[in-house]
Amino acid sequence: MKSGCMIGRTKKGILTCVVLAAVFAPALAQDSDTPEHGRKVVYRVIPPYPQLAKQMQLRGTVRLMAVVAPNGTVKFIEPIGGNPLLVKSAEDAVMQWKYAAAPAESKEPVELRFSPE
Image (cartoon, rainbow, N blue to C red; front, side):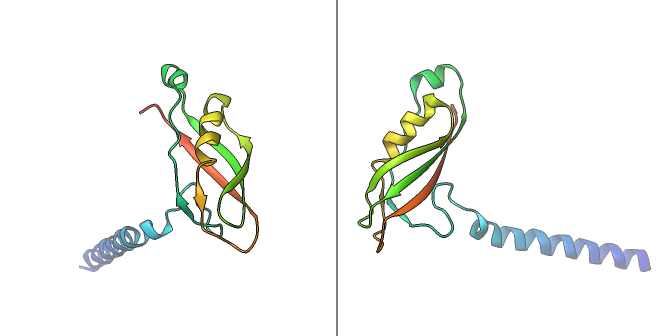
């Protein structure tokens, strides 16, 4: 009888964890190109997947640092990492992004994932 009571408690504990994870997981998920304490992207251009990268089944992550003017326009991009075939496409797209206005220029990290699917 006592072991059945423990099993019931364990199942309730697991169920509670599953419910809490389902409720709070979306709030914990971060957009890869909007940092937790950075400026919000108000207009975003999705980078096209380069044809050569598709043919090569190339996938990967491109990391950039966007220097953003106070009015929200991207002034320039500093590539931090990623395959050169993917970096150019990412840079061209992020240069068209628009961030929320802020009192001063800022550097905003951007991470974009490319996959042939």
